[in-house]
Length: 134
Image (cartoon, rainbow, N blue to C red; front, side):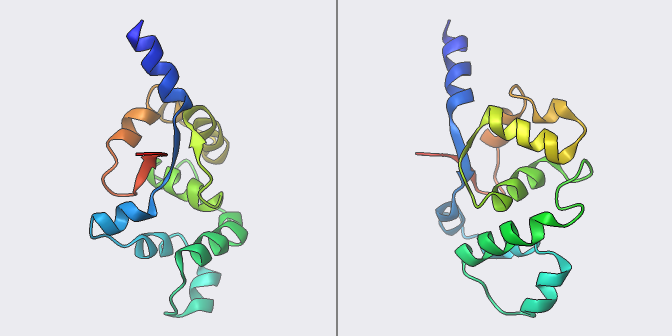
């Protein structure tokens, strides 16, 4: 019974990129997010710094529409990070996260399943993806 309750809670738990996590762990969100900029935006910015909100908006409005922004060849956790960048960091539950990742990636639905995603997300030490409220 406990595993059923935990499974249901895990499915309902919302996830997002916790910007504060980067500061608490002496990491840079902007450095990581800037790697997701398309070549057009990189050229346009040429070393200029964007705020976190500007990065989210720019990636959502421009970069996420480029071919290959997320594909089956993109590592799964990078895909998760980019998905949150593309949706403006809107919190998602595991079911919706898996559904959207499957749409973007088009392949390998096992790694985007509700059985696998929580394991990957719970062990993230790089992308700052955390449950809402943690």
